[in-house]
Picture 1: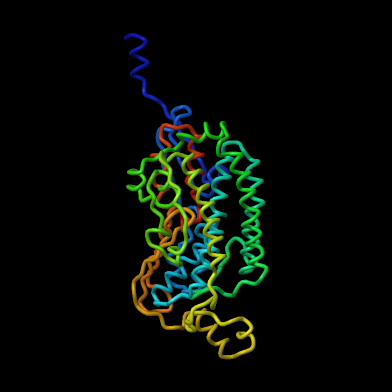
Picture 2 (picture 1 turned 180 degrees about the horizontal axis):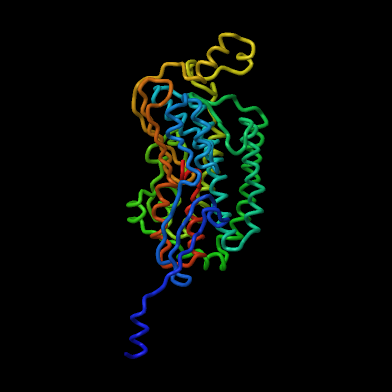
Length: 398
């Protein structure tokens, strides 16, 4: 037998490599078991569930108000959007008419949260290519969004912001001042940040063509949000199924072409500019009126009344403990979260807690495509692909 024949009949050996579950490059607690041919990824099997907290099961044993803090811990980079989506779902079940002022205030909050979410994703893509400076620079501006949230509700990351029917309190002058300052200062800093990366030759060479996905494949996997739009499909819940008066605002939907890491980066960059436009419109045209709907059975009374009035204290207790009557029904409501369509499927049997509540978590859905997107690439490209998908472990496990 010739030497060449012996080599050709030898069985090829592969290396198994664990990427995660606890590794700085995974951006969360989840694992990828990679099958490697040298530095090339032949196959991978992802494992999630390391921080599974059984939110959906817990929700079956909690009154409606006590579910709001659970939603905070899905995509914690933009938790106010999770809160608002849940409150709108309950309002749909109750058939509550929300004042226009509340809609606009919610839009401002959600778009601020979207900016904070996208800034994390795009800056981390930079970090994973070796560019730490843009990350440190833009995060100083991102903190100003948390300052605004803190003035609105007292919290920064897991906000528990809002109420069923509206907001806990109206905004004071300091909130408006901070938002206006943000609309002046952030675009200047963000443009400088964009100049560092968007047309940077080293950055572009590193991310262009990395982790591509076609529009057909993205739709087959159930992609939504920036990852779907980067593949060329202009689906956005704010436009296709408007909520919170989004139909009142003029904004564009950034769309990519190749669905690679660079497109995902640029789509999110574009959405940040569009969010700034929406916030400015909402602030300039903010309607007058109340910051809550007239639903005393579900809208918590003001704290000063609770502390000084027995009837208000009783209502506060009844609402928090789920003693108010809830209609039977089955509703689904979705919002455009930082990572795509964030939906809540709620089934009520009239009890104090949901009979069934399912969270549609976009991260969990599009993470299924990760093995197909990284086959044939090297580990460095796999990390970049994961970063550009913005896989958030809290939303992945639920």
